[in-house]
Image (cartoon, rainbow, N blue to C red; front, side, top):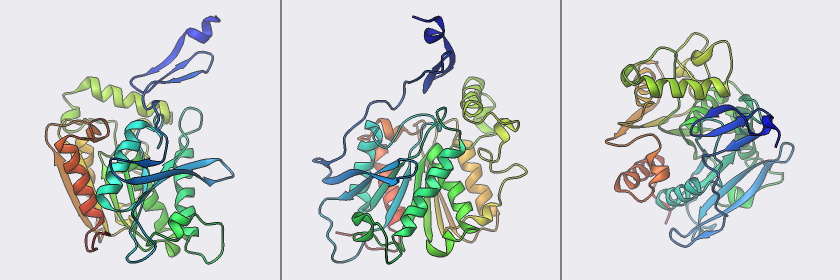
Length: 326
């Protein structure tokens, strides 16, 4: 075997390894589950191509007992985590979590399979996610090539963005971008659910100060996916540095920030909530902390009492002011 083929150039624990010949070996999020009817939750899912030009796909979920009659449920655009370089909607843990989430919230969810670093530059993830939002908005037009689960079942006046970790970061940037775009005239985002959002910065805050190992680990993740001269203070990852957009420009009415006590990112999530409240943004900001748990614990331990509590809280947030669809 060529020495370059077996020698590791980058070890991005716990996500992936890049070998000197350019080969990428992913470690996290590689186990996958097929779509279909989940017998435990009675949630049905299927994979669809949403952007034929780029091949970007999504996995769409709906309660199996949903009918075209009566009140239509909200649509949730879901963006998975994985530090922009790992996982997919088909990853077993995400598929299981989305089934449970859709069953509890009684929504239709579109889990976007945005393209990953290093095969694609970081901005591709944001552009793929933006294109997914445009695809959803196209269903409000009279003519076009539609997905029946969106066109026939969804209330397109109730659209939410939900993401965990890097997916919550994506949701944040989409909500800023839509404010200044023509798309914002077509599609209204009611709210954002941010689960353990991936924001960061060069200077440590809170628990980051005393946890040098994890601070350096997260630094390494970001510098791998975004090797810019701004480092960990790039506006993509630090929403409070010069050049970042004003939080008051977030185009939604409600935001729920979920943090976990043992998560190294928790202080960034708290700061985001606090700065949002002070920003002059006109919406309602909520925050909930899960005691004794670490980053995206609910993805790995779906059936724990605390994971069920998190899902119920998120479901309640999505259904505020609306009767649950039976």
